[in-house]
Image 1 (cartoon, one colour):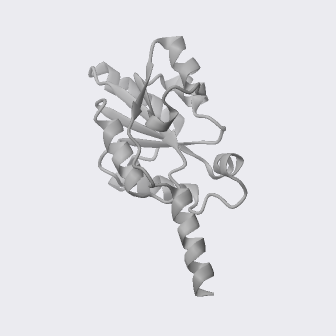
Image 2 (cartoon, rainbow, N blue to C red):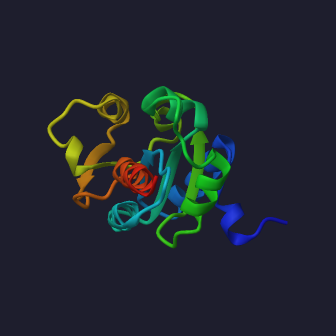
Length: 166
């Protein structure tokens, strides 16, 4: 039997079923996506704000191969199953589903969340998710990002610290 956190990590088919149930109850389904490589305060704030937009928050998590395609061969730092457990452990997150494509559009096309959340740094930019949600009448909404909070910044700080100590 899965523990509570592990039960939040689902296959696409399990996610589709959970969303069908939520919709039957009149719930608003919100999704977001990302690598969530080294979880930090910016991620937690972002996910809490995303969850506040609806009744169910689904995190579409980039697989290891997807992260490498987006961020380069040195990423991710944390393997996908561990990243999934950490994200699923947050109270704001209802489900985590890992995907391997460069974008989450394939899953968005299938599960059709009411709202797709992106960071405010994407506002005013063309993003692939816009085309997906336009097909079924969903919408993209933006939440604030915490300045200076990023996995890249954390990795760079670690590198500098190691260099200084060498």
